[in-house]
Image (tube, rainbow, N blue to C red; front, side, top):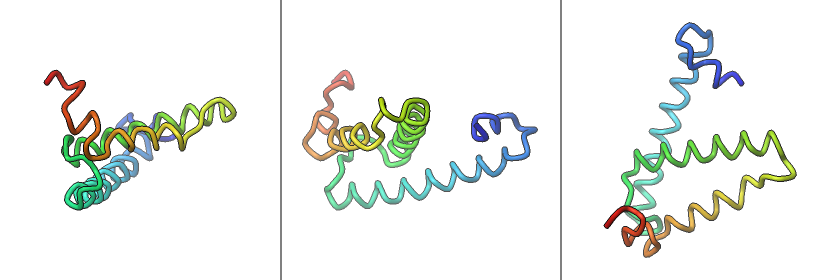
Length: 99
């Protein structure tokens, strides 16, 4: 709730959430780049963009799980997404990107 409320620049937690997301994006981008260089993660999506996508997925999964914990598994959908990002998968081949 605080994260959603903090989008208002006047909210007391606004800067904290801006800083938090900036830190998480930067840290995750570095980890993604390392995995891409090691060949364990597809390089089809730039690290910075993939970090934004993964954070959005996790935030959405967390919210859905909090609303319906018995109906929404947080782990399996993330594992499925990461499996799609493995080298040689649809993302690597450009399927679904209009190519």
